[in-house]
Amino acid sequence: MPAKTRGMTSLEIAIIVAIVLIIAVAVGWYLYTTFVASTTGQPRLNIVSAEFSASDKELNITLVNPGPVDVQLSHVELAGKTYPISSCMSGEQTIQNNVIKLGQNATCTASIDLTLTPGTMVPGRVILSGGQSFPFNAIVKP
Image (cartoon, rainbow, N blue to C red):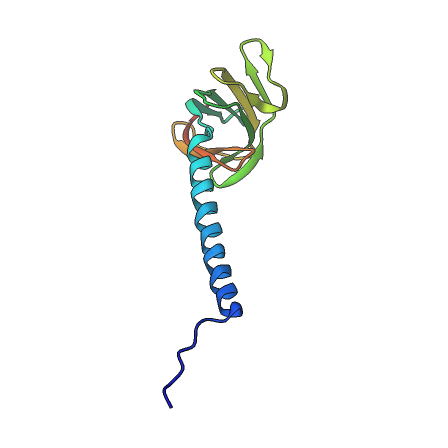
């Protein structure tokens, strides 16, 4: 008796279609998220200067937001320790919620409880509310 060739059953076809759909959705999601990430603006921050006053125990950082989006400062790290930002000023105006607008210059201040030697430089970072960090070296003034 000759062997009967058997085609695929409907269950086998359904399994293959489901696997193809899962792969198609995964590839589509990857492409979509890659495209969205490349078109949204990432925050940037230029740190013009950073000075730590050893007598006042105060860190002054001069910043510029070159864009393309507004940035909100969260805190600063100096010599490996985290400190809150006490105030930010743009000229004579106080900046609310530490949000530096696109193209705005700002001077931000933080109280630091460190004893540092004048004339040295101390590494630090400005941390944004989104978690991005921007490094700087602060010069220690008497």
